[in-house]
Amino acid sequence: MIDVLLQTLPFFALIGLGFGAGRTGFFPPEATAWLTRFVFYFALSAMLFRFAANLRLSEVLSWPFIWAYLIGTMAVYLLATGVALIRRIGVEEAAVEAQCAVVGNVGFLGIPMLAMLMGETAVGPVMMVLAVDLIVFGSLIVIIISAKRDGRLSPGVLISVGRGLLGNPMIVSIVLGFAWSASRLPIPAPMNDFLGILGAAATPGALFAIGASLADKSAERMAVAGWLSMAKLVLHPAAVAGTALLVFPVAPYSATVMIAAAALPVAGNVFILAQHYGVAPHRASAAILLSTVASILTVSAVIAWGTR
Picture: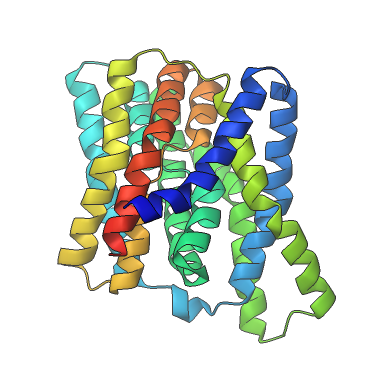
């Protein structure tokens, strides 16, 4: 595990650098917002498009893989929801806590880190995990909160969710990349170089932005944050390991990548959604902060176990 920990340390050191820059005020929240926007819409999109354009969808799309990840993740989602309801908090807060328990930082942290640590062949499985997170669980929290507030599930909510998915640059870049791949056209050298240069900014930019965004996160409600961090860092990878290794015929390498992706800390967009709806933003903030710090050890342990 020590070897893997040393390999992951540079990634977390970049997060730490961003955190220090944000905490001292050298990199203010406005700068973090613009850096995040650049990474999200340009650098990470270029990286995803380039990866997808060099893959065949038939090589990546695996229904056993999708079902294994979806069912394992849903089990933890329902567990977190049940624990929240037993504590007698509202349905909306339960939806936010369940989101914290299963939605990891796959886009900004997982894709660049796992591609470098586990090889570029890891990108295909990671993109499948990202797609399930965005399409299923990213939509679920919006649907639950909107339905609870309106008292019913209106067509307008579903239309809004659909528009959000179609406007998400990560989904758009993956779809366009696979469409280019299906055309069997080679990527012209200047275009490939352009995408390579722009995509190379995704890893340092994303990691620095994660750290800078953590600088203004609070550490309130640590008991709940501890439970949600354990659910995300331990129970989530354990659940998908069970479904991928024992229930569905998932290839060993793809299962290892799936488990590593499930072990990633809570995604920053959970806080954005919680803040947008005014539902438990401090709780989500604390879970993101605590899980990111703890993941320095837990992610390394999971990758070391999977690649032993």
